[in-house]
Image 1: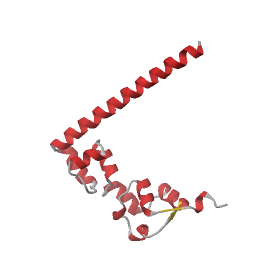
Image 2: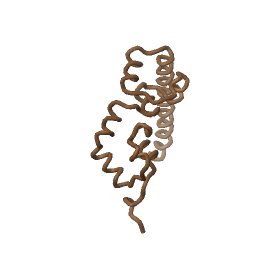
Image 3: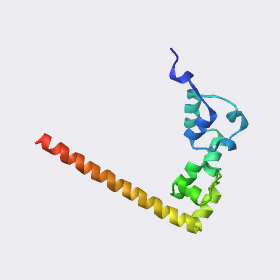
Image 4: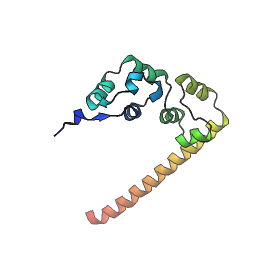
Length: 134
């Protein structure tokens, strides 16, 4: 039986889990399989290249979407198809184009509605549980 630490992951999987843009990583990282122990070490003690990527980018689309407070689909609708650096994200936040303002509003409305639905479901569950407890 093999231990969990002997399993390896593809570089794309590790990059996704680390929240980094794979093409911006060193070639040796892109060409190697990463063991779970190596992955844990990257998380615990990131090398300088990883810290620099996390700090300045380029960032993958999920990270860009999170930093801009929009959905990944909203990025696509806004024409953002490529990875962005921290400086580019900051510039967008300082002088938001019309598409970003609209997408942030849409994203906030969707989150609000999702929370409302969740709260309603919780109330229904609480009502169902109450008669059984009495």
